[in-house]
Image (tube, rainbow, N blue to C red; front, side):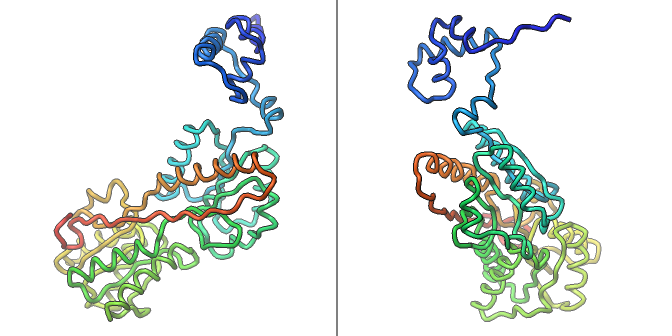
Length: 347
């Protein structure tokens, strides 16, 4: 079978009646091109089936228009939803994504991952791995200055690091204060793994709201699970065995809240009459739990979009200035979604 000849930028220029340099300017945006000329050029590209040599262009422009995304836990709602926002905003800004999935959040292969991304000439990096244990120990200002711009998601503030996160402490405080406001006084919490920074923040929000109201927040009211519905079911069983008088539970994600609901239905605990339950995440299914779940909405896709926008700004500023780009910190505020599981009238 005879191979079709490769279409070049010269062929496009001839078809559009312009110079090859004008075609290049239309593709790269390095110099302005009139709308009429741009339209002729892109019509010629479509008619000829021209495929720009992106690798060659990246060498000339020192930009690959590629963002590296390092992620973990896409089987969970939060990370997968955040990635949707990252992909949408990256596409809107003309970036491709290079996705590197870690098998464990505490992976020690950080340097190998970074070396691979640098070798692929990414313009910037979004580090979308949750802060777990000491998996941020590699971060320091000197190391960050040697890398392309990096935006970290959901972690404790660090000098020199640009971070976009949800205010987990406020989210937990909203959930707990809601339970206090509707008259609950013995409020337990089902946490995720305590090695996660987000879990510690949510625990602090729960404890702070109870303390401000003069209510107990002692260890018997706290139980650790692993984010799954099954672990939530086991956790509520243990919690009720410890403290049969609890009248409310804050579960640190909707899946664990689902497990808690199942256990209550199977064991004669009426929700919300005997026990109020509040989750965290506002997964699409939470409105269809029985009863519908009161929960805290994280703006997860927006988190991803904000991260891409901030990274884009840093990429642009680094290209325009010889001075280091100052780090940014963006914190997105969650909101409480009131439904039937807490016993309050939905808002």
